[in-house]
Image (cartoon, rainbow, N blue to C red; front, side, top):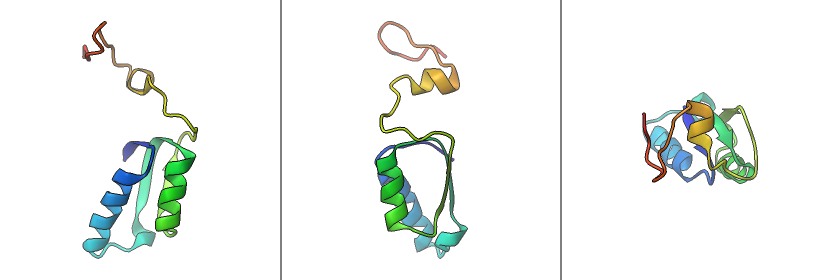
Length: 82
């Protein structure tokens, strides 16, 4: 599970580590809450057999992602108040 796929760089690294440990691409399932089309295209073009399940695809990453999905609160300085 990975919360946000924006560019796909972090997922790319994770998949490379899995492949170094002999995990077949077809056995990899990426679960995420939010994805950008660019990030999905990057991962799909590099690893066509990897499965990706996301709840939302949008070209812009929401700036209030943590607040919307995890109901976290921040103070006026932007610091988490959980």
